[in-house]
Image 1 (cartoon, rainbow, N blue to C red):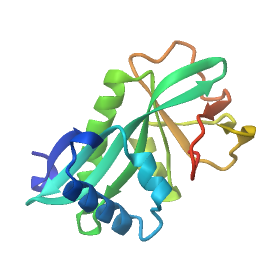
Image 2 (image 1 turned 90 degrees about the horizontal axis):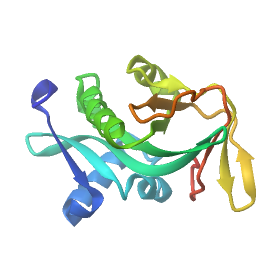
Image 3 (image 1 turned 90 degrees about the vertical axis):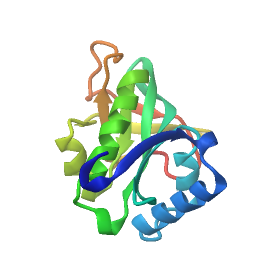
Image 4 (image 1 turned 135 degrees about the vertical axis):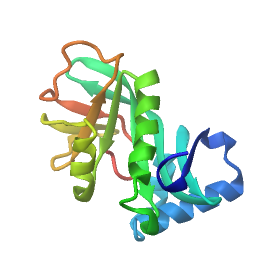
Length: 182
């Protein structure tokens, strides 16, 4: 049980029923006000979902997927956070914080680094939770080579497995994928 009678559960994408996936996509479409496309949906799948429900209704979500990020000379097994959303009637009631607490537990337990790309509206939320803004250049390894991605609000969360000496001032490069690279 979490804030406001909301219950959390974690499940791999493969363990969600077709009805649950349909409900999840509907939540994300609504929460992102029509700006959540098929590539965004694809990015949120294949990892572990943290689902928040109240009275059997899905009210919050975040997923952790595996990505490879290169920081300086190191390639890091990264728990990348995708599709963090709260249903509008449940915002500012602790649902997002509860979902992120579980997401952060999953990241800390199995990855060398946590990472996410934040909207302008959520920058203070993530910074307030201890996520660090990446200050160095960011880019993506694409089929055409490394392409810079200026203007991205990339945040990282060091874990107990983060190699010593990692600097947020280094260049950070993500692996390629269709749609938004970060």
